[in-house]
Each structure stands twice: as C-alpha cells, then as structure tokens.
Image (cartoon, rainbow, N blue to C red):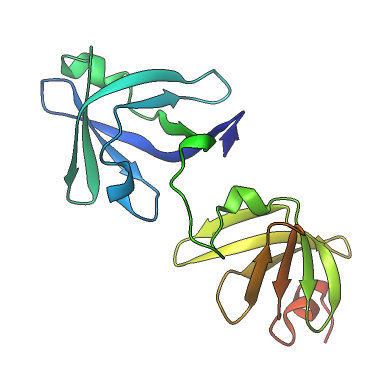
Length: 177
C-alpha cells in the first residue's frame, strides 16, 4: 500500500520487554538493506505517518527488534502495536536491471504472447507461497502468477508487462470449456 510517497515495509507485531522495544515483521526482499536506518515512519491509514528515530535494530528470529528514541517503557511500546512501518519511495534500495517493485507496475498494460493485449495491472497480491497480478479481462477478475514461466518481462519505459499465460487460464476465469 502507498500512502502518498510512502511504501509499507512491515508492521509492529508486539511490544518486547519492559524497556520500550517492539518486535516487527518486515516484508522485504533483503532485511540487511534496512539494518542501518536511523529513522522510520509509523502509522495507521488514513492518518499521516509519524517519523520515529531508531536507536537499535536487531534481527530476532523471524522478527526485527527495534528500540526507538523516546519510547522508554512497555506501555509506550504497546501504543505502536499494529502500526505500519513505512519509508519514502525515494529511500527504497536500488534494484538491478530487470527488477521492479510491485507498486511500479500498477496500471501497466499486460501483453500476452498468445492472446495479445489483455488489460492493465490492477493490483499485486501476496498469496502465501506465490505473488499474483490482479487484472480484469472481459469483466472478470483474473489472477496471473508471478513466476518466470508466466511473467516474461517488465518494460518500465513502455509501461508493459509481457506474459505467456498457461493454456486454459483465461478460459477457467471466463467459465469457458
């Protein structure tokens, strides 16, 4: 989700200990790219996020443990539980050629090698083990798996997503045999 120019990277899951630390879940490709951050924004939509200074950021099992400046006890930490962790889009790590962030392809046209132009990327959803592109085709919602065999290329300049849909995928969504 994007709040103006912010990108969600996780959320505060619970308070930790009595000295104001929290445990957070991050939904990022490489946690190490975020370990040196000195500040982060927290919020709940639709309110504007607030900036928090980071004192310490430690990997703790499947969580990240964060100590913030001015959050000194468990009661203060508990007020942060459930808030979303955000960073400005401009501070996202650089990607290699051919890589993209999901928010970047929203609205891109989908061109399939078998069917031609299908529609636009309406959303990208994470469905546990596989991420999916959401589009509408002939007034039906269609989910396209984001896997190398299906999603061939993303051209950010032309705002195009190139696919080769598995045989029968569109027909299944359209109720055709």
